[in-house]
Length: 447
Image 1 (cartoon, helix red, strand yellow):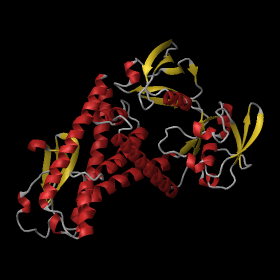
Image 2 (cartoon, rainbow, N blue to C red):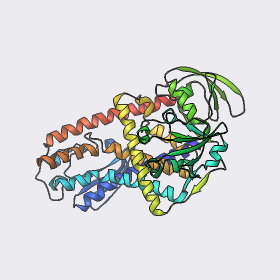
Image 3 (tube, helix red, strand yellow):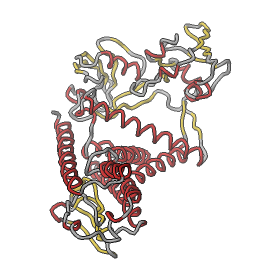
Image 4 (spheres, one colour):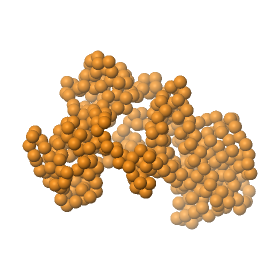
């Protein structure tokens, strides 16, 4: 039953994302009077179709291969590699007979819809769920703040209890600290308590230089506790026998006070084998050796806790939710772009960073959680937008690249170049699909 719920969530999300992406291309094409011959959810490889019907000039259907979907636009070199349609003179309802700017809009239609979908879902979640925060009093009562190595340069220390910013007491410490009104203020004074002593610190003017988008450690944060929510198959944690529900106690006999202190220890010991003390869900203690990955991870999803019952909730208007949803969507796309850049540059092992259908399905989990479902679906939608706009032939971005060349030079790209580029792009994508499937399977089997 659990496997069925996981699969239903995965295919529901995939069907929604693919259908809306292709609908973006479809509506843009029809708006410019371009004939769309096929609209398919999933690929009907080798002509095998699970379902089909025809309405007007378009055949609608569902294929058997759940690796995406497609719309077949008349007069366009696409995945079908149909060259015969290009031999005759262009018809007025064909893609190739339209101005380059119209063709460009058709090609970005799917990506635009994916971005809009991500923004709408995230904004909707913010509007319906609000935003929770840990009040300053609770942070101070439960160990004070975690301070990253970068923020320690300002004079802060983990365990500090902040009481005021620029002389004013704040209820939402993290929200107030990260507020541009404070960060951009020429006066940034923090009042805190350390070992029963009241201390006043003046932060440097250029603390914005301390914000690193590549760092997974926050500058400051509440000292969250954690245990293992879910172990990733094939990860160092899985190979060492770490189980869901386990709690880490120490690393090489070194204790830590919060989740981010634990992550900081892992970063320092990246690539090394360390002795981890764990306590299982039934209270049993044990030690185990685990080889930490080169990126300072063990391969598990944490269950963050420690402030249950203390959190406060903020409700937002529809307009504010939309602004916040747009900003968070941008941040997610930027984070994905940085991560992809690290994979391409070799700074991060692709095997530890990519997830295919199996990995994504596992993220949805065996229980139906609507918040998790929509959050993950929005994240994937934004990731698909980024992947599809990459300048690789056979992807939307490849077509956009050729169209931009045509707009700039006022010369269309040779049809043979388009055809060869499509073949090369499809070969690249096929190789990528095979690699991702291998990553998924090897993780599942523990390789």
